[in-house]
Image (cartoon, one colour):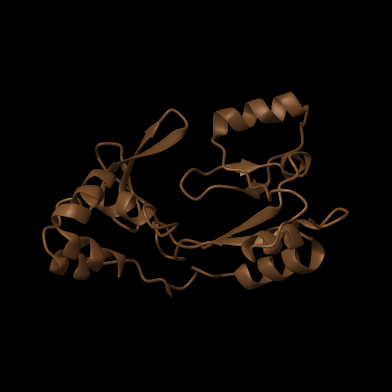
Length: 196
């Protein structure tokens, strides 16, 4: 166990390296309604200026992150400079992956999975995936990271283009969780093609 107080960055790095930090590193995943309640409970009235979500246009206050002793600050890839979400006649919003969301209250609920009907690896391989190098995608990110690194002691977590957050999120985002899990057993070649 480390004696004394560690910096947030050192705490996260120790955990990643399987060394015991002074406490468990903290991050905050929260939706708009609970966030407002936490902010009210903490008595914080500072402006919400920090982007903190990849689907919902959520911003939160740095003061909340400080009060909760979070160790991480996030950097998000951006949308391509000439790309805009498609607003469909049924009120849904289609993102650059072809997924469709319906706004329900304050939330963007994923309701259409563009690869849910895929039957063969070919269907996965021929899908028109977004260009990760599209102009604007990384605009200003180097400066943001450098400033966070030089001016704070927080760990910096980059969020890639969705849906590529972890092993199951891609499946849930494009195939649909039901299709993804069924095909791990029934059609593993399809899932392997997707995961590649």
